[in-house]
Length: 93
Image 1 (spheres, helix red, strand yellow):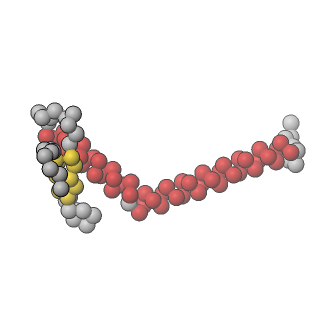
Image 2 (spheres, rainbow, N blue to C red; image 1 turned 90 degrees about the horizontal axis):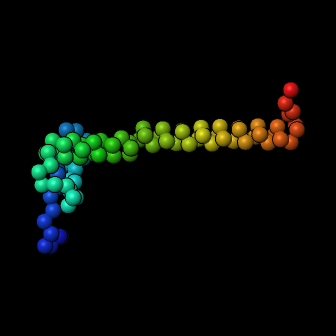
Image 3 (cartoon, rainbow, N blue to C red; image 1 turned 180 degrees about the vertical axis):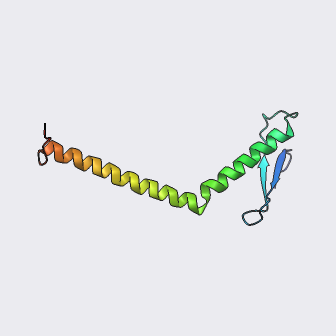
């Protein structure tokens, strides 16, 4: 419970109740009182959408494959440099 503090909040209701019913955002003190309501709501919806996109199972799967592919490519390049440096596979020119 918060005592003695007045906070401004933005409540964004979800059109799809599968993930969440509503998101509550606390506005910073620096936000002017006369800020356009549409702009504040649009920014809150963008943040909520970005969170859902970032934490979805598809995004997690994509991150894992990018990390695995990067590790394989990096290992291949390091191996090629090592083989060329040791003279096992000399350059043809």
